[in-house]
Length: 639
Image (cartoon, rainbow, N blue to C red; front, top):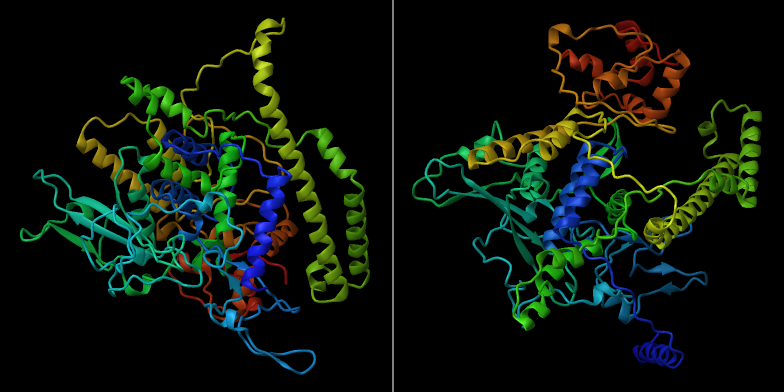
């Protein structure tokens, strides 16, 4: 379509909207402030009952909440925001600009307009360029200095260029395909404390290179990150824990305290913590994936914006917000902290501003209600089960299952690749989509009804004879039970321990916080299936000591899972749990550890139980591993 025709269409739509009065002003959007961030972090760390692939993903969410709040960045600056477009019938991506033969034998060459734009070969379309439908929040310009076309391509007003070299190789490059933030974009430095005998001052400089309008004029933004007194907001400690666990530092530090206590030479004011070259282009926040060791955080794949969006939505539901929590809510909070947090009425009347009113007025969680229903009622579940489309799809799935069984397949996945197996897969996908659609619609209806009528009902209860709701005394301790001991210690440290009164206490508290974060992200919570009952304990369980080599047994109970036993990240109760029957053990291994079991077919995966005893045994095949597990460790797996 020519450019002139595009402009005519836009002008026509604007004129029709004006005459028919179709354009309506939207309601004010939620805007985050510091109190809201505290609610989000508390709901995520204390009240969230969801099971993450591993605890590193939970720490990722804590760090991204803080990083998005203080930088007011879009999702494109941190995560992979690509979406698949132009797929071939076989599912392979179409590479723009590639010459292909058409149905009439002619060659389809790219037009001049298409060839003038840069494309990537990944089959994805970046959300950073070529956007015609721009959301209302995206029409706000980035905060810039004066709009001048300076060749330095960097916005001033954030931090002074104290160092021209950001990474070890001297370049500030990024991943053009994914556009995610990498370890090369974070610079850790220490400076000498002006008070003699005090620890070094650690700070980090975070550089965002993927911002709005980067295709027209790249705008690099840099932010100084330092320690916060409130450890929930301490983004620097969280980034340091992630970096320490990844092992990105070139220096051989034995403990995190070495960074703060290293004596800086007298002729220098600070030092730079160099990053290993192989870690420069590794994303800071990474997507979970299925590996040979189970479902856990990937070592290379960047986190997708959709994954972060799911974490944000879950946190918003835990805090009881009326609208879904999104990245734009966090971004608006940072922007308003710079541009709009000013009490004009107080300035006009020359009076002191009421800080309580101003703080609560700009809070996104002012009207939040954590009693809002998150599930479905029995009546709604019954209606969903009796939905005609759901009943038809369930009947189809049952009929296809019977046909697969009739053809002699022991398991449904054995029929994968056949015509019946493909029909069964498509029917299951349709049923899942329909159930998800109906459940989400019912949950959204419940939330809207709650926020529409609940406040009025509470006000009207004062004038009626019904009993008044009694205020319950706050509990002295959290009633939650955590499978991961490190998470329980973090909750105890952050919420139930006395606040530090001196600089020494604050320093020791921060060191303990960083060490807990390093240990915490290496753990993994056992997956839960079915409806879970509420479990409570009065005190968090202490971290059990690791067994020594002398007490590690060679043989185990025949009903214990060898993969759970070899996973030190799981809680002890889950690791040594015994199944009630051998068939249940076999089903558990084949359902939860299928990829780990198949990895022994490559001949490169070591036996985990032998590795605990520092024995290097490599089975050459899956049958050999099963035979070894039965003879050496006393656990028989299904042949």
